[in-house]
Image (tube, rainbow, N blue to C red):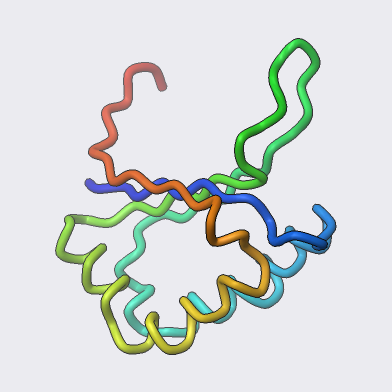
Length: 111
């Protein structure tokens, strides 16, 4: 199993709740409407919370998406539907200069 982890901040001028609502109500339906999104095995969105005694979060959200293999991940991110329908929407709620990503093989240590 392969996972992509994406961290990002909301676009300037957008409130945190507005950011969460936009991602849930506008962006997620765009993504999951394309047939290639069926390659996603699991999808989790993690929103930052303020925690006393810890530094301010680097990101407003971290997204995790699991795929059976690297080919399935590449199929989604390089398909015409993603490139023309989903990817252009990112600018509407994400500070694109803040995006960090890593592709990993997940090893569960404690369950």
